[in-house]
Image (tube, rainbow, N blue to C red; front, side, top):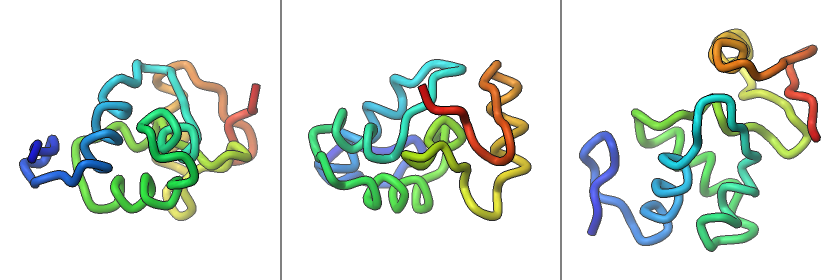
Amino acid sequence: MALGLDGTELTECEEAVHVVLCGLDAGEVMAYGEVAAEAGYPGAARAVGSFLRRHSGYPWWRVIAANGRLVPGMEREHTRRLRAEGVPVRDGRVPMR
């Protein structure tokens, strides 16, 4: 089993999510479902959210809801981090392409 950035053991699914998240560059944003699909687990958007809640050290701010919404309760920090990377944020959302 592989280890996460926080030193915890990862399941096969978590390891795949780890690879996708570690591959995100500054300013690159993906929806939870896109991360799951890229990891080989389409439909597992909630698993990606759970992963980010349980494991530290990952660029959580680069992951948003499919409709562009930011993490509830973390909007201020989420906005700050995204804007620092050049990502536009308007009214608590990232404009979707």
